[in-house]
Each structure stands twice: as structure tokens, then as C-alpha cells.
Length: 210
Image (tube, helix red, strand yellow):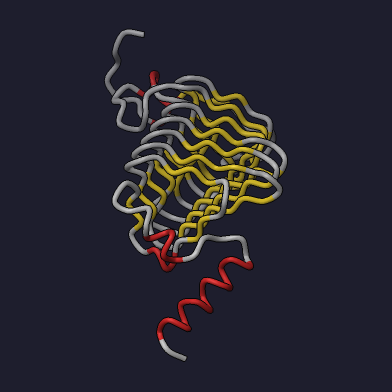
């Protein structure tokens, strides 16, 4: 089998699985920075704004009329990033960071919104319904669903009292509202989860007026 035949066979396999052929993924450049078109899988109903960065092993899959929007300057990777929208909408805001490390987002009939400059890292799973606000963070091997993380400053904000809501740690976190400057640590203790102030973990951080 020659190179052209191999490429056609690969494209046929990708099409059967609901993904664009490699040449269409590569053609997204230079507006979208696809670092390895051969390992990036993109389905129909995916909208990628200019400046988005897709690292190798990124998968954006849509099913049953679902849609995915990746904002300008958002970074997916490094690490395997998988986003699946089944009959639902996933919105990833401008300059959001999914990775480093494995990140999985699943919207199965319930929407997921990830705000501007939000950060998801380290093996986290986000299931819809979920609202991850501007600057909010989901860190570590946590599994979140039915959560609402408030808008705030991103992880570069020096005063933790002004940062977006944070969930971190391990294990499941369900039905939590996490406000500005607050954090929920999954798996940190037995019993119900506790909403704490982020400053508890950064006592020496500077303060600025609210």
C-alpha cells in the first residue's frame, strides 16, 4: 500500500468514527495551532477560535447534535485532553488551560461551561452539568459534577481571596457551589466535604482591597 492509499485508509477510519480527516485538521493552521494533526481528533460541530492550541492526543468528539467551542488562545494539553459532547454544549473560554496532565470533560445531555483563564489539570474529570467560572480551577484526580465555581482571578492572582473557585485533591465532588476565594478539597478527610478559604493554604499571601 502506497502513502496515498494509507492516508485514504486512515481518513476512512477517522470518518467512520466521526472525525475529520488529517488534512482538514492540518488545514486549521495557522489560525489554530495544531501541533500534531495526525494525533488530534476533531468531530463535526467543533468550533475553534483563532489562537487555540491543540497539543498531541487532543480529542474533541461530538455526538447526537452536541457542540464544542474552544475559545481564542485556549490551550488543550500537554497531556491527553478529551472533550465529549453528547446532545449537549461544551464551551471552553478564551485562554483557558486544560492540562498539563490528563483532562476529561464529558457533557452527556447536560452542558459544561469552562470560563476564561480557567485551569484544569492533573487527571481531573468534569461531567455536566458544570459551570467552571472565569479563573476557576479544577486540580488533581478529582471528579466533579453539578458544580458551580465562581468567577474570579486566575491562578496568577497574588491574593487568594480574589481568585475564582477551586476544587482540588482526589475523589468525587458533587453539587458544590464554590465562591470567590474558596476551595473544596476532595478526599482530604472523611465525612462531608468542607468549603474553605483558599487563604488557609496560602496564609502569607498578600492582601489587596476587595
